[in-house]
Image: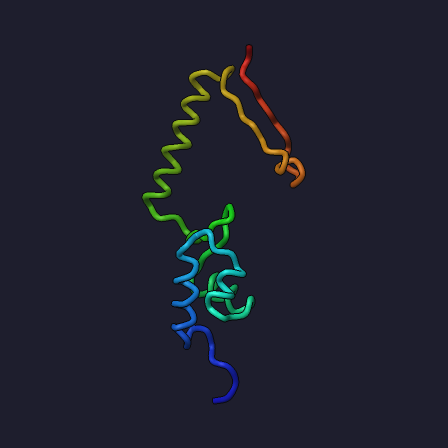
Length: 112
C-alpha cells in the first residue's frame, strides 16, 4: 500500500496533539510546534479524532457531560428567578462585539 497513512493509523500523532492541547490555552501554532505536524493535520486530529472545538479561546469537548448540562441549567434557573423577582433592577449588558457581529444591542440598566 502506498501513500501516506491515515491519522487513525497513527495513534502517536493523536496522542502528541492531545498532550499539547491538554493545556487549554494552547494555540494552533503551539500545537504545530510541539508536535511537528502541519496545520491541516493538527486541525483534522483536533476536530475529527478528538472531537473538540475552540470556544472562547479554549479547547473544549464538543458535547457537555450530564453534570455540566445540569450546572448550566441550574445557573440559568437562578438568573431567571432573579429576573422574575425584581425585573426593574435586573440588567443585561451586551458587548460592542455583539453589535458589530449583527446582534441587537439591548442594554437594560437598573433604575436610579
